[in-house]
Image 1 (cartoon, rainbow, N blue to C red):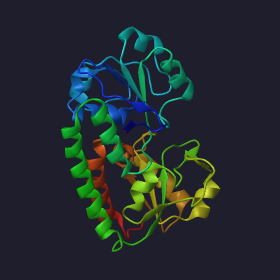
Image 2 (image 1 turned 90 degrees about the vertical axis):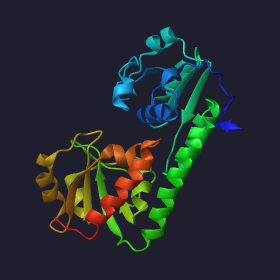
Image 3 (image 1 turned 30 degrees about the vertical axis):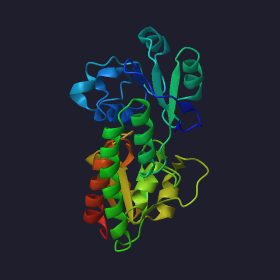
Image 4 (image 1 turned 90 degrees about the horizontal axis):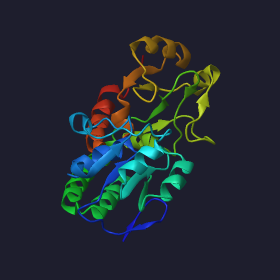
Length: 269
């Protein structure tokens, strides 16, 4: 059975399926599964694969979706995500789209179910199996070497003014756990908690990682953050797509994570 993140059961689609995807990383996955010709709409944040998506109409952002634009395209399927898209958008889409597929990977291994779901719905099981094999190999390799890596306490910043980070319940935090990096704060009431400057000082992390998205941290921010996190903290820019995008990019993301761990484990500012 093909069951999505909210328990909806989906039948196998026909060859004439018309897909709108409102999730950047899943749009990339659709192309990796050889479904590009059936993708008829995307968000402005769906930017990979760059050359291929240029022909696909943009339908607003992940939060400000162009519902009338989607209606005009008459898709058979729209793919959404619990974190990326708003509940009212989902409810509105169900009024006129035959199939709204809900995704919600919360850990790297959740990509295995995502590949099976999308591949199964759209008859791309062979391509999905190829991605599954590649992902399993990367996961197994990281886990074999995890115990040999030093444990690091990490603040992963995703926004500035206010400072925002990720809780341990997020996909990003669970990615970092694969190399024995543990995000701070250890507990949080929100998935993406705000931090004051005093909070950053008090957390005293070993590493502070500045993501390239959604806030575009640059070299100019390094000294500012070093001043807040303390003398013993290593502050580094990281590729947010590689550490937060699921789907097919997760395979390269795990390779990137392994290299990052080798480069930064044990480093200080």
